[in-house]
Amino acid sequence: MTTALDVKKFGRVAVLYGGHSAEREVSLKSGAAVLSALQQAGVDAQGIDVGKDFLKLLTTESFDRAFILLHGRGGEDGVIQGVLEHAGIPYTGSGVLASALAMDKLRAKQVWCTQGLPTPKHSSLQDEHDCHVAAESLGFPLMVKPSQEGSSIGMAKVNSLAELLTAWKNAQEYDSNVLVEQWIAGPEFTVAMLDGEILPPIRLGTSHDFYDYEAKYLANDTQYQIPCGLSEEKEQELRELTRQACAALGVTGWARADMMQDAQGKFWLLEVNTVPGMTDHSLVPMAAQAAGMNFQQLVVAILATTLVDKK
Image 1 (tube, rainbow, N blue to C red):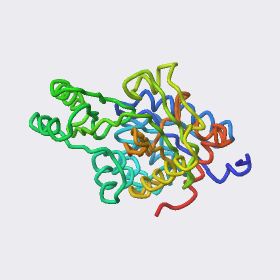
Image 2: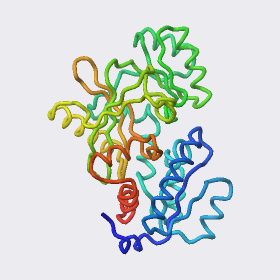
Image 3: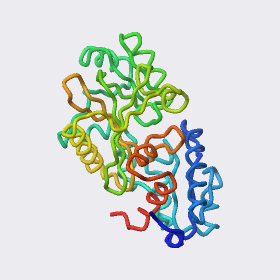
Image 4: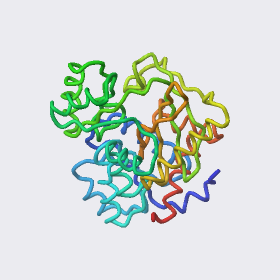
């Protein structure tokens, strides 16, 4: 555990949250929780709701490092990372390229496919013709997602061409590039990575069709199983797949990988989140707790990754 004396090495810390993405409300909750925990740990931390005056504030205030809790666009896609790189301010999480790759679900899948890592068959939807082609080549059911959104925003499970066309149009409200992938029937698992170590996997259970926004942040009946119920061999396979998925994208610091397991027991990569949620419903704190780390210890450990230069 990091002591009160140790936290002085962090200097003045900017906790960045809010922003303008579709995940703003979740980001505000994550930021408030982390800011409070850092301050209670004795860290000189200041919260910043990133807006139009952010660059001015960044140049006029003297910050030694930044804790990024901006979910979605502008915070998880390499943009804020590039700003901080230019300002010479160390920050939590992955670098510019890894952030951009992981945020773009289509590009992440393309990288995984070149590495031979399992991810559901998929296609990109740009117009109605693409929807027809995807329906013919992939079959139903399918999952439709904005390629560059998180928190399950804009996602939908579809069972027909008519539903696919509607879901594609809805997803386009969030991103012009829409991803469609084969539906994997089976349990969903999420696995957190902290400074190269894999935390205990979590098995998710929900009464919804999938682990959607409501199941993540609002529902009280969502089930979180830790230990995850897998055999030792299968759990090790899940951990190794998480490690490989992060390494393929260049993800560092901390992250969370989401995967499905089909009826034959095979795991399928869905995505890697490089700025996972840190609310009272969030999964990384649950995994950390299962590993014997409380919330305050977790946030200090994440911040400590900024003490090592990014490669």
